[in-house]
Image 1 (spheres, rainbow, N blue to C red):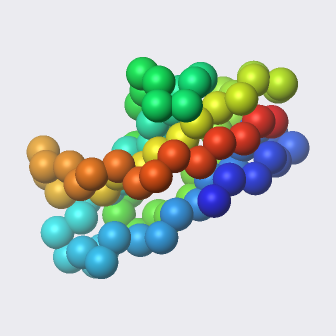
Image 2 (cartoon, rainbow, N blue to C red):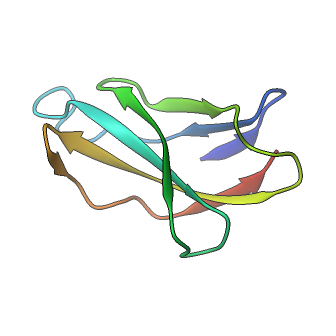
Length: 85
C-alpha cells in the first residue's frame, strides 16, 4: 500500500513467506510512468515491511514495486502501486 506522508511517500508491503528464512532484504523500485523503467530507490533489511521515500518530489506521480532478495537471487516484483506526495 502507499500513502502520502509529511516527509514523502510511505510504502508498506506483506512480508515474503520466506521471511524469516532465506530472505535477506527487500528492494524498492520506482518509476514515473505506469510500467515504466524503474530505478531502485532503497533496499531494506529482512523483516522490514515499510519504507518512507523522502526523495519523492511533491506533485509527481510515482509507481512503486517491491521484490524480496535472498543473497543474489530476487523474487518477482509485486504489482505496482501508485501515488504522489
